[in-house]
Amino acid sequence: MPPKFKRHLNDDDVTGSVKSERRNLLEDDSDEEEDFFLRGPSGPRFGPRNDKIKHVQNQVDEVIDVMQENITKVIERGERLDELQDKSESLSDNATAFSNRSKQLRRQMWWRGCKIKALMALVAVILLLVIISVFREVETWSLLLRVLPADV
Image (cartoon, rainbow, N blue to C red; front, side, top):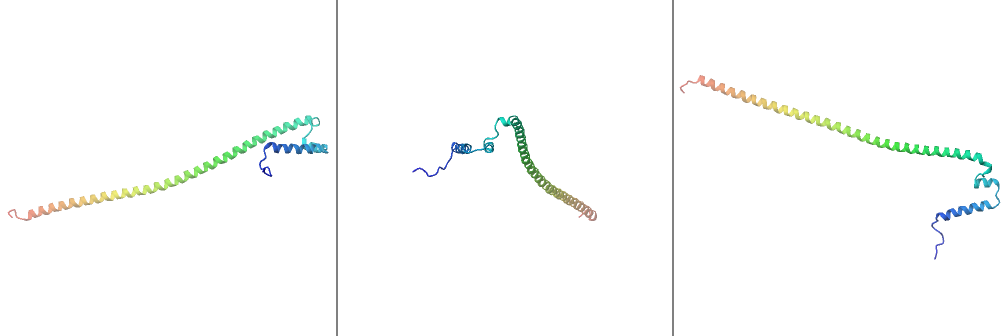
């Protein structure tokens, strides 16, 4: 059983219906005003003015094309500016993170240097104490040797 309604219309069906509707409007009692709106201006009455209108229409079309190109370029420029802004924000964030990390590393290295200096000072003090204790011991032995008789 064929479908009751046609679900898909092709281009021929649509243009054919428009043409038949136009033909019906033009064939029935039509006056000059209806003809003007349905067919456009007729040739001989609007000859020289029609050329000027076409010329002006061409200029308007050119201006429209130029403006559409300009709008497209402005939109593309806006997109590029958005991308640049995103990249600059990313660079700014990275620079801040780098600055913070470098300050932290500088502090760590300063503390490491302080620890090394303290360790070196401690080693120097220990060596000095060892040297002093050795000299005192030598002095003590030399004093003992002087005090004690040589026979003993």
